[in-house]
Image 1 (cartoon, protein in one colour):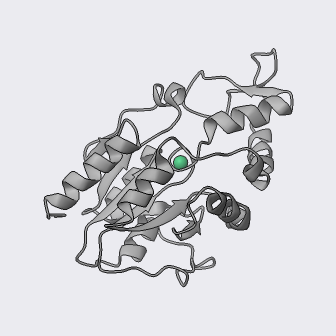
Image 2: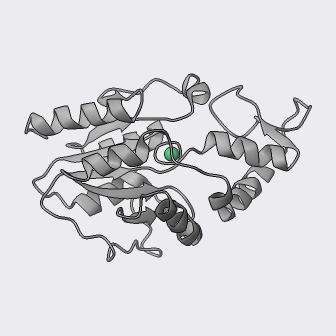
Length: 225
Ligand SMILES: [Mg+2]
């Protein structure tokens, strides 16, 4: 098994994050706190393209409007870069995300961990702040999420929860923070229906209310072992 590590050339700064002795909830952004697929589809249409729901991936499914032939793979990162640069014009909170996080913040520390180039942190921060999500510190990194969660949690004796839509991220956290409660949550129902089933030890939440139920059940059991 490959041991993932945080790139020593690009160490993550945790200085803006203050954790208490309460449980820790680490939460992905795209498709979890903010809608991603639906606003990305709107963004693509504005540029004469569309994302077809043919499989659970972007590559091979972005086509010029009216065509079924995908744009070159090399164009996908460029489109994502343009989208992230102007994300505050497109993205909106997922249903019940802000309200549920506000509720949960009464009993747990919440940290956002987003797999986005760190150069877009400022625009994302502004977007989150505008939607009542200013209380939660944000980490943006393209590093694997498991080592980040492990470093953040630092083996403290409190429960830790990780929420993400992508199994690769959930499995990375499972490998590096084995006590962590893992929840798969995805806002876009059409792409969720094509997503691979969560592997062992990963809970599936239908929506934010369901995620909150799973988290509270875990916390009330008083055991995170
Ligand atoms: Mg995501």
